Length: 316
Image (cartoon, rainbow, N blue to C red; front, side):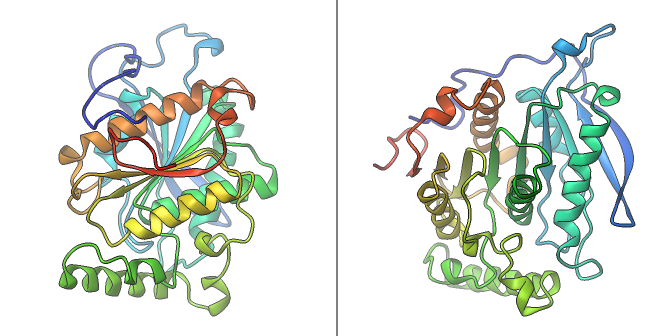
């Protein structure tokens, strides 16, 4: 049963040292494009003389912004919080944005980033065998796309994915009938999302591609254990819950966690008011990254999605 937001049960192990996380900036080539990639280390990590056996796992964080906006600076506070709380090395690509670079540029940039990390794991001082994916809103869509690409191309397998208010359905069929929030706010959200999708998915074929529209993907089996966080009052709530249910039917351990109230404009934007989201996500990532192999309790859990309020029993 999930703990209540703000209740620090099974707290994350403390990161080594004090002070601020350290951020290193890199440039990665992706399909002829050069993208910036920030690598955020927990305070004091790595300790001088640290051996490879003690290196931390890593996360790929994909930022929000509706495929057309957002970036590394806006995600900075959340990324630093994750580096401390898990703890882990957090890798954040400034993936290509639409309309200048429409689908599939962004998911390909995410995949190129993973390949770059795997090639440079020793130089980056991280355990390349243990990693997970995190994304908010459009970044959640890209995290799902990245998980599919990694599965389909046999690149590497993440231990889990944490999706924060993910957008999964270019048709907006779930959001349009969600019934959450005021009518004006709901309609404005739908208009913005429709415009963003038009920029990101310029052709009809793009709008039904499984890497762009995971809600329509015919094959979700083989994706990693997933936590989907949605706000109680949010046009994206029904969409996130429906996707978690689809994962469960495909045999993927998945849970939709309904967070009370709202969270401003998202965890990145309203970070200080959304600590409960980060606490729950960090605990989920800790469990994923601690799993030694496919027989761990995390993946032995009965397949199926559950929708729960923090502090309440998952729906059966």
